[in-house]
Length: 236
Image (cartoon, rainbow, N blue to C red; front, side, top):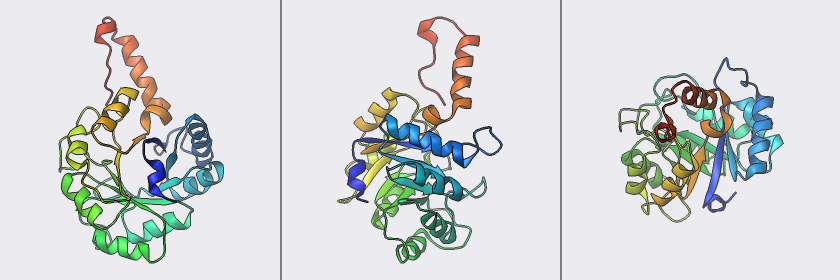
Protein backbone atom coordinates (compact mmCIF):
# COMPACT_ATOMS: atom_id res chain seq x y z
CA UNK A 1 0.00 0.00 0.00
CA UNK A 2 0.99 3.63 -0.44
CA UNK A 3 1.31 5.38 2.96
CA UNK A 4 0.32 8.66 1.30
CA UNK A 5 -3.24 7.30 1.20
CA UNK A 6 -3.39 7.84 4.98
CA UNK A 7 -2.67 11.57 4.76
CA UNK A 8 -5.35 13.73 6.41
CA UNK A 9 -7.09 10.71 7.92
CA UNK A 10 -7.98 9.01 11.19
CA UNK A 11 -6.42 5.69 12.15
CA UNK A 12 -8.10 3.74 14.96
CA UNK A 13 -6.28 1.45 17.36
CA UNK A 14 -8.39 -1.58 18.29
CA UNK A 15 -6.92 -3.13 21.42
CA UNK A 16 -8.04 -4.49 24.77
CA UNK A 17 -5.86 -5.27 27.75
CA UNK A 18 -5.29 -8.84 29.00
CA UNK A 19 -7.99 -10.04 31.36
CA UNK A 20 -10.65 -7.63 30.12
CA UNK A 21 -14.05 -8.82 28.85
CA UNK A 22 -13.28 -7.54 25.33
CA UNK A 23 -9.88 -9.27 25.16
CA UNK A 24 -10.93 -11.56 22.31
CA UNK A 25 -9.73 -11.41 18.68
CA UNK A 26 -13.30 -11.84 17.42
CA UNK A 27 -14.42 -8.81 19.41
CA UNK A 28 -11.50 -6.73 18.15
CA UNK A 29 -12.36 -7.72 14.59
CA UNK A 30 -15.95 -6.56 15.09
CA UNK A 31 -14.74 -3.27 16.53
CA UNK A 32 -12.39 -2.84 13.59
CA UNK A 33 -15.25 -3.39 11.16
CA UNK A 34 -17.34 -0.84 13.06
CA UNK A 35 -14.66 1.88 13.00
CA UNK A 36 -14.03 1.25 9.31
CA UNK A 37 -17.71 1.96 8.75
CA UNK A 38 -17.28 5.18 10.73
CA UNK A 39 -14.49 6.42 8.50
CA UNK A 40 -11.22 5.01 9.83
CA UNK A 41 -8.62 4.89 7.08
CA UNK A 42 -6.66 2.11 8.80
CA UNK A 43 -6.70 0.16 12.05
CA UNK A 44 -4.00 -0.90 14.48
CA UNK A 45 -4.29 -4.43 15.86
CA UNK A 46 -2.25 -6.08 18.62
CA UNK A 47 -1.37 -9.75 18.68
CA UNK A 48 -1.07 -12.31 15.91
CA UNK A 49 -4.58 -13.75 16.09
CA UNK A 50 -6.10 -10.27 16.34
CA UNK A 51 -4.20 -9.26 13.23
CA UNK A 52 -5.46 -12.30 11.33
CA UNK A 53 -9.09 -11.79 12.32
CA UNK A 54 -9.05 -8.01 11.89
CA UNK A 55 -7.48 -8.44 8.45
CA UNK A 56 -10.34 -10.72 7.45
CA UNK A 57 -12.94 -8.27 8.77
CA UNK A 58 -11.87 -5.00 7.12
CA UNK A 59 -10.84 -3.69 3.74
CA UNK A 60 -8.67 -0.86 5.08
CA UNK A 61 -4.96 -1.39 5.87
CA UNK A 62 -4.07 -3.15 9.10
CA UNK A 63 -1.14 -1.82 11.14
CA UNK A 64 0.07 -4.79 13.14
CA UNK A 65 1.97 -4.87 16.41
CA UNK A 66 2.86 -7.61 18.88
CA UNK A 67 3.24 -6.57 22.51
CA UNK A 68 5.48 -8.92 24.47
CA UNK A 69 6.09 -7.92 28.08
CA UNK A 70 5.34 -4.70 29.94
CA UNK A 71 8.72 -3.07 30.56
CA UNK A 72 11.39 -1.66 28.28
CA UNK A 73 11.04 -2.42 24.58
CA UNK A 74 7.88 -4.53 24.24
CA UNK A 75 6.04 -3.27 21.13
CA UNK A 76 7.13 -5.67 18.39
CA UNK A 77 10.46 -5.79 20.22
CA UNK A 78 12.54 -8.09 18.00
CA UNK A 79 13.00 -9.01 14.36
CA UNK A 80 11.27 -12.33 15.02
CA UNK A 81 8.23 -10.52 16.38
CA UNK A 82 8.16 -8.20 13.38
CA UNK A 83 8.38 -11.06 10.89
CA UNK A 84 5.55 -12.87 12.70
CA UNK A 85 3.38 -9.73 12.51
CA UNK A 86 4.02 -9.54 8.77
CA UNK A 87 3.26 -13.24 8.36
CA UNK A 88 -0.03 -12.79 10.23
CA UNK A 89 -1.19 -10.45 7.46
CA UNK A 90 -0.39 -6.93 8.59
CA UNK A 91 -0.22 -4.41 5.75
CA UNK A 92 2.05 -2.19 7.86
CA UNK A 93 4.37 -3.52 10.55
CA UNK A 94 4.80 -1.21 13.52
CA UNK A 95 7.67 -1.60 15.96
CA UNK A 96 9.34 0.19 18.83
CA UNK A 97 11.20 3.10 17.28
CA UNK A 98 13.08 4.26 20.35
CA UNK A 99 16.85 4.20 20.80
CA UNK A 100 16.66 1.75 23.71
CA UNK A 101 18.35 -1.65 23.73
CA UNK A 102 16.25 -4.42 22.22
CA UNK A 103 15.77 -7.87 23.73
CA UNK A 104 17.52 -9.64 20.84
CA UNK A 105 20.50 -7.28 20.84
CA UNK A 106 19.80 -5.93 17.36
CA UNK A 107 19.71 -2.22 16.65
CA UNK A 108 16.70 -0.63 15.02
CA UNK A 109 18.70 -0.42 11.80
CA UNK A 110 19.48 -4.14 11.89
CA UNK A 111 15.85 -4.97 12.65
CA UNK A 112 14.62 -2.85 9.77
CA UNK A 113 17.18 -4.35 7.37
CA UNK A 114 16.20 -7.88 8.32
CA UNK A 115 12.51 -7.10 8.00
CA UNK A 116 12.89 -5.42 4.61
CA UNK A 117 14.46 -8.62 3.26
CA UNK A 118 11.21 -10.53 3.81
CA UNK A 119 8.47 -7.87 3.94
CA UNK A 120 7.91 -5.29 1.23
CA UNK A 121 5.17 -3.27 2.93
CA UNK A 122 5.51 0.02 4.83
CA UNK A 123 6.84 0.19 8.37
CA UNK A 124 5.81 2.35 11.31
CA UNK A 125 8.13 3.44 14.12
CA UNK A 126 6.60 4.10 17.54
CA UNK A 127 8.93 6.86 18.74
CA UNK A 128 9.44 8.75 21.99
CA UNK A 129 11.55 11.78 21.08
CA UNK A 130 12.88 14.01 18.34
CA UNK A 131 16.09 11.97 18.25
CA UNK A 132 14.39 8.60 17.87
CA UNK A 133 11.95 9.94 15.28
CA UNK A 134 14.76 11.42 13.22
CA UNK A 135 16.76 8.19 13.46
CA UNK A 136 13.77 6.17 12.30
CA UNK A 137 13.14 8.59 9.44
CA UNK A 138 16.77 8.30 8.34
CA UNK A 139 16.26 4.54 8.04
CA UNK A 140 13.45 5.18 5.56
CA UNK A 141 10.63 4.07 7.84
CA UNK A 142 7.48 5.35 6.21
CA UNK A 143 5.27 6.21 9.22
CA UNK A 144 6.83 8.04 12.15
CA UNK A 145 4.54 7.95 15.19
CA UNK A 146 4.68 9.79 18.51
CA UNK A 147 3.23 6.71 20.17
CA UNK A 148 5.75 6.39 23.00
CA UNK A 149 6.24 10.09 23.79
CA UNK A 150 5.72 10.39 27.53
CA UNK A 151 6.01 6.66 28.15
CA UNK A 152 9.81 6.56 28.42
CA UNK A 153 12.32 8.80 30.14
CA UNK A 154 12.91 10.79 26.94
CA UNK A 155 10.10 13.33 27.43
CA UNK A 156 7.59 14.26 30.15
CA UNK A 157 4.07 12.92 29.75
CA UNK A 158 1.64 15.55 28.49
CA UNK A 159 -2.07 15.67 29.32
CA UNK A 160 -2.97 15.16 25.68
CA UNK A 161 -0.94 14.46 22.55
CA UNK A 162 2.62 15.78 22.60
CA UNK A 163 2.01 18.80 20.40
CA UNK A 164 5.47 20.24 21.02
CA UNK A 165 7.06 17.07 19.64
CA UNK A 166 4.80 17.18 16.61
CA UNK A 167 5.77 20.80 15.95
CA UNK A 168 9.47 19.95 16.20
CA UNK A 169 9.10 17.10 13.73
CA UNK A 170 6.67 18.76 11.30
CA UNK A 171 8.18 19.27 7.89
CA UNK A 172 11.32 17.31 8.72
CA UNK A 173 10.41 13.99 7.11
CA UNK A 174 11.30 12.85 3.64
CA UNK A 175 9.05 12.40 0.63
CA UNK A 176 6.60 9.57 1.18
CA UNK A 177 7.02 9.63 4.96
CA UNK A 178 4.13 10.50 7.27
CA UNK A 179 4.14 12.10 10.71
CA UNK A 180 1.52 10.30 12.79
CA UNK A 181 0.19 11.64 16.08
CA UNK A 182 -0.52 8.85 18.54
CA UNK A 183 -0.90 8.79 22.28
CA UNK A 184 -3.52 10.39 24.53
CA UNK A 185 -5.68 11.75 21.71
CA UNK A 186 -9.07 11.67 23.39
CA UNK A 187 -11.26 14.32 21.78
CA UNK A 188 -12.02 15.64 18.28
CA UNK A 189 -10.49 18.94 19.41
CA UNK A 190 -7.22 17.16 20.18
CA UNK A 191 -7.30 15.56 16.74
CA UNK A 192 -7.58 19.05 15.24
CA UNK A 193 -4.78 20.33 17.49
CA UNK A 194 -2.52 17.48 16.41
CA UNK A 195 -3.22 18.24 12.77
CA UNK A 196 -2.54 21.93 13.37
CA UNK A 197 0.76 20.96 14.98
CA UNK A 198 1.82 19.18 11.79
CA UNK A 199 0.56 15.62 12.02
CA UNK A 200 -0.28 14.08 8.65
CA UNK A 201 -2.56 11.50 10.28
CA UNK A 202 -3.86 10.85 13.79
CA UNK A 203 -4.33 7.61 15.72
CA UNK A 204 -7.10 7.36 18.30
CA UNK A 205 -7.49 4.26 20.44
CA UNK A 206 -8.87 4.45 23.97
CA UNK A 207 -11.46 7.17 23.31
CA UNK A 208 -13.10 5.09 20.57
CA UNK A 209 -12.41 1.44 21.35
CA UNK A 210 -11.97 1.08 25.13
CA UNK A 211 -15.36 1.32 26.85
CA UNK A 212 -13.96 0.54 30.31
CA UNK A 213 -11.84 3.70 30.30
CA UNK A 214 -14.49 5.80 28.59
CA UNK A 215 -16.99 4.75 31.27
CA UNK A 216 -14.62 5.89 34.03
CA UNK A 217 -14.55 9.37 32.46
CA UNK A 218 -18.33 9.66 32.53
CA UNK A 219 -18.64 8.06 35.97
CA UNK A 220 -16.15 10.55 37.39
CA UNK A 221 -18.08 13.43 35.86
CA UNK A 222 -21.26 12.14 37.50
CA UNK A 223 -19.64 11.64 40.91
CA UNK A 224 -17.72 14.89 41.02
CA UNK A 225 -20.17 17.25 39.35
CA UNK A 226 -19.35 20.88 40.19
CA UNK A 227 -20.98 22.66 37.28
CA UNK A 228 -20.61 22.55 33.53
CA UNK A 229 -17.59 24.87 33.53
CA UNK A 230 -15.61 22.41 35.64
CA UNK A 231 -16.16 19.26 33.57
CA UNK A 232 -12.87 17.80 32.33
CA UNK A 233 -12.11 18.30 28.66
CA UNK A 234 -8.71 16.55 28.58
CA UNK A 235 -8.65 12.94 29.64
CA UNK A 236 -5.51 11.07 30.64
